[in-house]
Length: 361
Image (cartoon, rainbow, N blue to C red; front, side, top):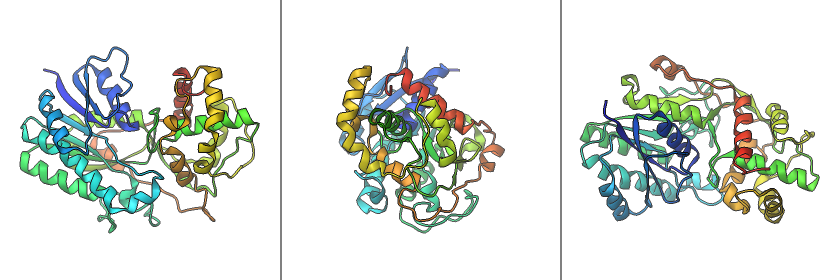
């Protein structure tokens, strides 16, 4: 079978980077990485990187015209505002995310070669950032009545698919973890750097959040495998799927495993705003990076906006334990994708990988 061509939009992000690696490793795909920044390309990568600003319609049209005739699109691009959480309710952020998808999808679809698009949502689709959600949250539930760029993008995607005749799949992962740096929402490098700074300053590496609840995680590598599955699976066409590792976790309970993976003594709970603490440690991190020969001496380049995401995920300001956030993955399994990974092992794997890449000491 002739190799197909997949465009991975947002290739520097936590999902896009994992998808780039997975599709490239398979060997039966021509892979185009599309992003504003140059991504870290896999060893031996034989595809190409296209630089494009998705907020620029003319620039997107020119980039698409220069692309090979793509059969598939993995749309993992995202616009977030500084400070992260507040922007989730703001109209200009919603419209920017809609415009980014439209600027890329419309010229790609007009070429007539597009067969399938995968689009990323998340548990904010169920209103997790606004109110308690059903346990488990199911894809069959009516659309949660709140304004969200997910709905704007989904409506545009469905209309384009009906007009041009391509298939699509929408994924709703829980908290996604990977090794991408400087992104909006990836707690792995934030936790790794936090442990190193605590060690350096003689501070306790205890769980920094508030009352913790039961949650689920999604390893970016597992999500990448789901994206590749959906590209071919008839049972994925036109569907929306929750996707998680397959188990549950509690931050406070997984903290000892994180301490062990990072060679940092575990300590009792040590509530602290990571969003406020980390920016003040830029000089400390610079010293750590110089002494250990780390590749990212500027802490801001490592964190992106993920230190703000940490406070949200750890429930730092919560007065009582929030309700559990559990989604059903039965629909995905019944459709034919049953992959899973142990969440504690996932954390160990990612921390080991960051060390091997000289991201953390």
